[in-house]
Structure formats: C-alpha cells, structure tokens
Length: 461
Image 1 (cartoon, rainbow, N blue to C red):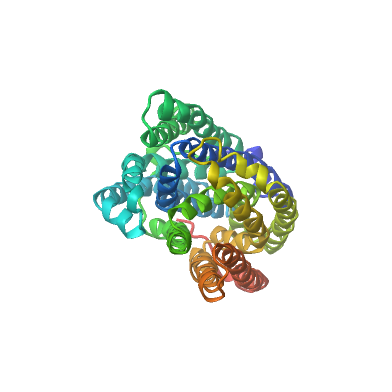
Image 2: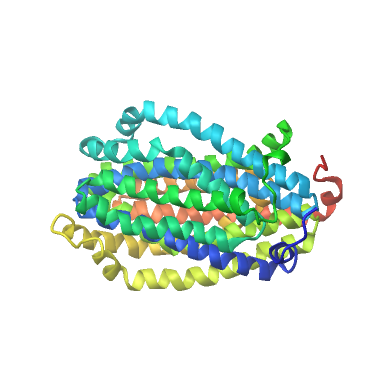
C-alpha cells in the first residue's frame, strides 16, 4: 500500500476545499485549451470564410475525437477515484492500466473507420464548397487519433489522484506550443489550413511524451502503473466503459447537435452563418471554462465520496459546485454581452473576414445567456459520471442537447420565423430546460444515497 499523499488527503477531505483546489488548475488548463482553439479560428479566419467554415464542419468530428479520450479518461477517473475512496490501492492501479489499454484499442479502431469514410462524412454534413479545406485539415487530425485519446486518459489518471498540477502542466504544453506553431505552419511555412492541423498534432504529441515520462520514467505518482500491476479483468473493462461509453456518446451528441445546427444555419442563411456560429461558439466555450473546471473536479470528488460511502460529502459537492458555477456564469455572461462588438472584432482582422464582425457580435450577445443555462445541468451530469452512473448523465445530455436544443432551435427559427436569432435562442432555452431536469434527477439520486449506500460496494478483487 502506497503512503497517502497530500493530494489523496485533499480529495478525501472537505469537498468544498477539494473542488476549489482541483478546479482552479483545471480552469487554467481549459483556458489554455480554448485559447489555442480560438487561436486556430483566428489564424484560419485569415484564410477566408470558407476556411473558417471548414473548421466549423470539422469541429463536431474533432469533439468526437477528443471525446474518445475524455470518455475513457472519465471512466478511468471515476473508477480509480472510487477505489481510492474505498481504500483499494491495488485495484486503483489496475483501473488506470485498463484505461490505457482501452485507449490503444479504441483509437486504432476509430482511426481506420474515420479515415476510410471521411469524404462521405463531410458530404453528409453539407461541407459543399468548403470540402477541400475540410479534407486537408481532417485527414491529418484524425490520422493521429491515438495521441489525443491517450492524452485524455493520461491526464485523467493524474486528476483521479488529485494531481492537478502536472495535469495542468501537460495541457499547458499542448496549448502554448499550438499557439506558437499555428502562425508558423499556416503562414510562414505556407501550409495553409493543413498547418493548423499539424500544429495541433505536434503540440499534443509533446504533451503525451511529458506525461509518459512522469508515469513510467520518474515514477513518483501515488498510483503505480508498472506493467507488473496489470491483471486483466473483464469486469474492470465493463466498469470503465459504463462511464466511458456514455461520456463519449455525450460528445457524439454534442457533435450531432452541431451538425444539426450547422444544417439549420445553412438553410437559413448559407455557409457564412456557419462561420459566424463557429466563431461565436468559440467565445461561449471560452466562458464555460470555469464550469468545465468545476465539473471535472466534481467528478473526482464525487467518485471518492461514493467509494467511501460518504453521503454528506456527495451532497455538499453537488450543491456547492452549482452555487459557484452560477456566480461565475452571471459575471462572465455579463462581460460577453457588454463586450460582444469588441470580441467580434478579433475575428475580422482581414478583408476576407471583415464582414463577419457585426454578425458575430449579434450571435455572442444572444449566446451569452447560454452560459447561465449550463451550471445546474452540467454539475448534475458530472455527479452521475463520478458515481459510475454514466448512462444517467447521457440521458440528461440527450434530452438537453439532441432533443430540446435542436427542437427549440427549429421551432424558433422556422416555425416562429425568428431566423438566425431563433436558432441561437432555441439553443439557450433547450439547455436551460434540459439542465433543470438533470438537476432534479440528481437531487433525487443523492437523497436516496443514504438508503442504498450500504448495499452497494466496490469489489475488492
């Protein structure tokens, strides 16, 4: 049995302190990630509206790609945290190794599938005249799928034991290098949109090397991931997939939603509307970083509390994360609304993209409300992932995003005749309603935790 580190003592202690200490580094990590995503959009915007729209078409697929790693990582994170909470160090090590095994197998399968059917996928999405840009970008990104999947799993392993410092450093390496390499590969080396893809791949590769050194070179984690600790257990694969599959499907749901919204935008106003939505959603996603940080921290804390059968910690973690989330969202939503014109100007620094500025500003002013609709639903979903109920989280996401957001967007745009404004408003309203359903469900689940906690145990072998 390894000695408990300060990180382990933190995640098994006061849930409020644990959430803040885990969330702050994660917020920084997500900020860096979103900054380099925005950097991609800004630099690609200089190539014209078609190139930016192509990134918009690829973004849903890239969300699936990242979702593979994050999904397996969430499954491993949840299982490891539950074993740590239960004091089962041996199985915690084994859970981490099973997560890495899954990353190898699944990335190999999906790389082949996506690369073979890439053209058909893009045609189905309606890429149209932007398809060559999309192909130049996507073949490179998806050809190196393993890098992104493994990165998500390795980062989750550090988070599961409360080591947010090194998880943050690894992500920072990726983000900073991508921001530096983007203009070099796109304009200096004249690779165009392919340069943005190569910059992303090389940056993520460096991050993977750094994390691999810490895991197998330096070997100073609380967990011991030596191959001698690997004991294949089908049940452990199933336990990991019970969170990983729903979590990955959630990202697929977001991607399908993006495809649906893009299709509505094209019908309502052409491919330029996709470029506008792509740019504005980059800003919305940036403002959601604190919520993602809180949610990721909550997953670990909830998993540990569930493994330890600590009802009070689970209840406190859920409520506290929502309160903090709403406070932050109100502030950020106000900033987005008030500075929408100034923010939009960032995307209009060339003649090819200058006309997009007022449209982007309009979209941001409406979508600023989206941030306010997220906290209660997102935190409830993360609680379910943390306790190993990934399917519950998936149901919430299906209702909120794939059903309600798309339905209300269609109603407001085409039935009520609100046009593009209706699409933006529908996305916001659907998120609010679906999130409220998730919140009520999570509260009921937690209130029942006292009764069934003693009957459910984490297996010891």
